[in-house]
Amino acid sequence: MNTTSSPSVILPTGKGYVVLLSGGLDSSVLAFCFARAGLPIKALTIDYGQRHSKEQNAAKDIAAALNIDHKILSLGELRPILGEGSSLLNQGMTIPEGHYADESMKSTVVPNRNMILLSIATAWSIASGLEGVAYAAHAGDHAIYPDCRPAFADAMNDAIKLCDYTRQELVRPFVSLTKADIVKVGVSLGVPFERTWSCYNGRAAHCGKCGTCFERIEAFELAGAPDPTRYAPR
Image (cartoon, rainbow, N blue to C red; front, top):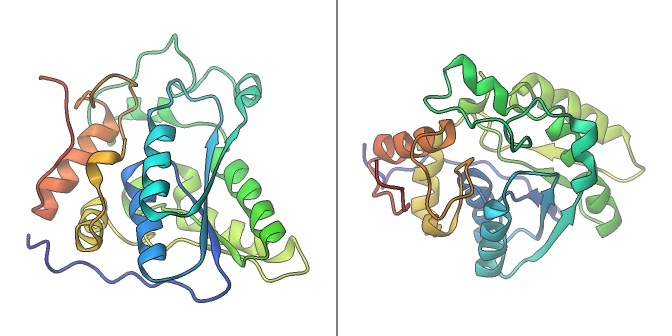
């Protein structure tokens, strides 16, 4: 594929949005989309008890590159509430390897994560006089993660519109795009992909074996773009 032809991304207009910035590939491209379009944004990263802080450090780098207001909110005390069933939280569980299509990848689901994160981001949007929240759910997330599916996002958007006297909305510009599409968009915007982090393991380099590494590798290949990610020797 030719990376010079990137998909069009439809962005809203208005007073600005809070972008959920995990530090991963998708949310970093989303932040670049808003910033390069000249839309006012704030970036929110939430520590909800993840087993490593690699993504949070990446989020700092991306926010610094864009020179945008960025907050990291620690909600580590959520871990007892979220339980021990997710391998992204439970240090005693093994991160599953292989493609996202594998049944084992469901162990990476964190209970009700996006509803919690979107609710907090909406509160910051309201308090900041902005018009809503943007998150980077994409078509490749739909099979594994219920809170990335269009039906969930539509329902959350309906709720967000009703939660305050001011106009609020949930924006998800990537909902119909594949990860390869997002890579193409990122290439066109000059996103420093080497500063983003996707791997579920918090090692010195991406493991290259977990579901999100598989997806990342495949996305660059399908997009026909060089992958600057440092992976552990296979």
